[in-house]
Amino acid sequence: MKTIIIKDLEQFDQATRIIREGGLVAAPTETVYGLCANALNETAVGNIFKAKGRPNDNPLIVHIADLDMLYKLVTEVSPIAQKLIERFWPGPLTLIFKAKSIVPRAVTAGLDTVAVRFPSHPLMQKLIKDSGLPIAAPSANTSGKPSPTNMQRVFEDMDGKIDCIIDGDSSEIGVESTIVDTTGDIATVLRPGGITYEMLEEVLGKIAIDPAITNTLKEGQKPKAPGMKYTHYSPNADVFIIKNSSAYFDVAHHNMFGDLDNLREHLTTLVNEAHEHNKKVGILATDETKHLFDADLVLSAGTESDLQTISAHLFEVLRSFDDNGIDIVYSLAFPKKGLGVAIMNRLEKSAGYHFITI
Image (cartoon, rainbow, N blue to C red):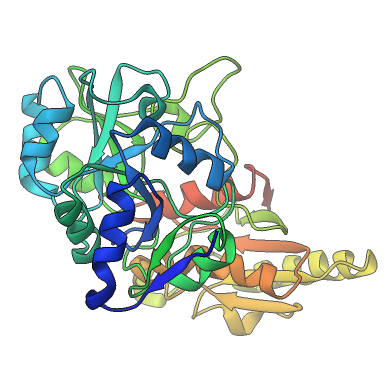
């Protein structure tokens, strides 16, 4: 299969035609690039799983471009969901609803619920509107790897496996959407993202947090939403998160890692030990701390004073370690507050919950 790259709107009708004919198109969204197919075509949806190597018990998110599409897919929109829709759609928020029978079981992974998002990215909206179809779209990467936030990373994983890639700007948010289950009496966060807990609480007052956010699912448990069960966001390198037991978050002094001398000393020891075993070492740091460390590759994900920059660059930095043949990555931990919750959720899954506390 030859993968077409679409670089301007004059070619856009090719992508629309591919979606209508049951093909696969990668398209930019404000979160990450998505691998798109007609959500109502079970064969097309099945090809998403094949292209990604994705387990078929991992449900997909359906993307819409108007509320009429939503009402065709779900049995009801609760008052909780309505409040969140009015505040956050279009945007990086996915909501869980009871599904109508029109939604293929391949999309829901056999659940009676469906995850729906109204993205804000104009190219994704155009693809949905021009095709006239709801679009199922997980991240456009090989399953388990860091999600792609630019066209080149999609091409590396998907060239020859899908029909088309729409070339857009790098994704602004850089981590996948927040997922909230609205089918119960209390809204439950199933995955943290660009819409933070604090923002949700401001609208709803009370929210619950699914324990699978901080722990892996138990054997036999079915995931309610994408990203809950399997290892995700992992480069080829082994990732370890460095936690400082005395760390604090001080934006004013650009320090969220506590005693920096102690941190540098311990990381120097870890790097030297890895070098003794002929391992290439990378360190994931910040703009403020990058100069402190010595390793084969030290990369900054962004500035501590704006976690949005770290969110936007996290997956690209993880992929860059692979580009440079790094065997072990030591990543600094970030405060679990605001967008930091989503950042740490992705890092923890990338590391398989392997921590080193100093």
